[in-house]
Amino acid sequence: MRQLDGQVAVVTGAARGIGKCIAARLAGEGARTVILDFDEEAGALTEKELRGQGLEVLFVKTDVGSYASLEAAKDKTIEKYLKTDILVINAGISHRLRVEDITVEEWNRVLHINLNGSFYTVKAYYGEFLKKNGNNPGKIVFISSGSAITGTGGGCHYAASKAGQNGLMRAIAKELGPRGVNVNAIAPRVIMTDIFDHLYPTEESRKELLEKIPIGRFGLPGDVAEMVRFLVSPEASYVHGQIVLVDGGRTY
Ligand SMILES: NC(=O)c1ccc[n+]([C@@H]2O[C@H](COP(=O)([O-])OP(=O)(O)OC[C@H]3O[C@@H](n4cnc5c(N)ncnc54)[C@H](O)[C@@H]3O)[C@@H](O)[C@H]2O)c1
View 1 (cartoon, rainbow, N blue to C red):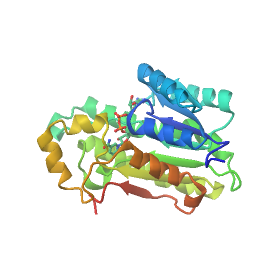
View 2: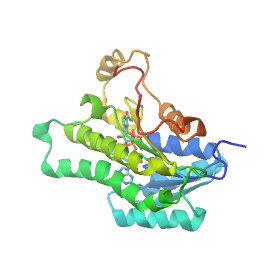
View 3: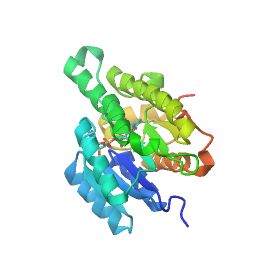
C-alpha cells in the first residue's frame, strides 16, 4: 500500500518545473493527481509523460488568474474523482526588476497571478475541505518563496506577493485546523527550473550564487516535491501553519 492510495491531489502550475515534479511525486505515492496549468501544450505533454509511467493523472487547462477557470477545474476534479484531499498551490510567476522598471501593470500582474491566484484556488476548492474531519484529513500546501523573508530573488512585487501568500496560508490554517486540515507553506530558494534559468542566466551569476549556499549545490525540484510528500503524510499532522525553507541553508 502506497502512502496516498485512495487520495485525490490537485497541483497548480504543474505542467513543468517544481509543480510537475510534485505532481509526479504525489501520483507516484498513489494519489489520483489533477494537473492544473494554463499552458495547454506543456500540460498535455506532462499528462502523457506521467501516464506513460503508469501514473493516474488528469490535465485540466486552467488559468489561476481567473476564478471562473478554477471553478471549472474544481467541477472537473469532482466529476472525475469525486473529492479533493490534497491541494498544492504552486503556480507563480517571477520577474527580477527594480522598482523604477516595475510598471503599475507589471505590479498588478504579478500580484494577480501569485496572490489573487492563490486565493482563487483556495476559494474554488474550499468547500471540499469544509467537508473534512479528523478521520479524513485534508492537506493544503502553498509553494511560497524565501523571497518573502529576504526580499531577494525576484522584484519587490514578487516578494510582496509571496509574503501575502504566507499571510493567506496562516489565516487559512486557523480556519481549517479545527477540521483536521493541515495547511503549510514551503519556501524554496534557487531551485533549478525555468524561473531559475531566467533569473540567473550567466555562469558568473550562478558561481556567485553558489558561494552563498552552505550545502554547496543548487536545489532540485525533487527537493521541494519530497517536502510536499512529507507535509501531506500522516507523520506531519502536527506541522501546521508553518513556512518551511528548502534552501540548502542559505537563509539562516
Ligand atoms: N525555482 C525557484 O528557484 C523557486 C524559488 C522559490 C519559489 N519558487 C516558486 O515555486 C513555484 C513554481 O516555480 P517554478 O520554478 O517551477 O516555475 P516554472 O516557471 O518552471 O513553472 C511555473 C508553472 O506555472 C504555470 N503558470 C504560470 N502562470 C499560470 C497561470 N496564470 N495559471 C496556471 N498556471 C500558470 C506555468 O505555465 C508553469 O508550468 C512558483 O510559485 C515560484 O514562485 C520557485
